[in-house]
Image 1 (cartoon, one colour):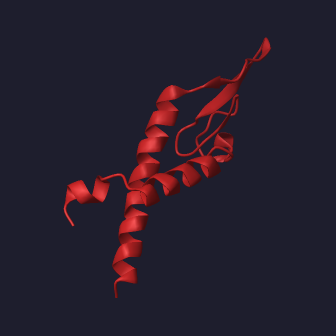
Image 2 (image 1 turned 180 degrees about the vertical axis):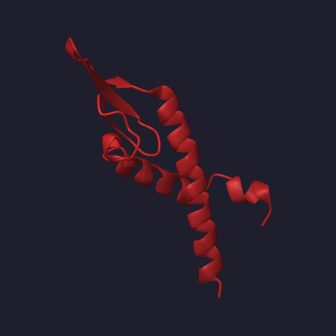
Length: 92
């Protein structure tokens, strides 16, 4: 399998990416080491949406687009790897 086939989107990879993305949307970002305590967000490895607490009170929740984009790329790569390993193991 070459690199083009590895990253070629198939329905299995897309569905797995959507499922994994839906799951990570509920992981609290503040539970990870090194996360700022004043930031309350969800997503892994980067926050997808969240709000910050300031002296004036909590700020409104906003979508963090760089987090969504980077998380989708990382999750798609993980999905490609999972499908690749599944195909390799099922052929034996």
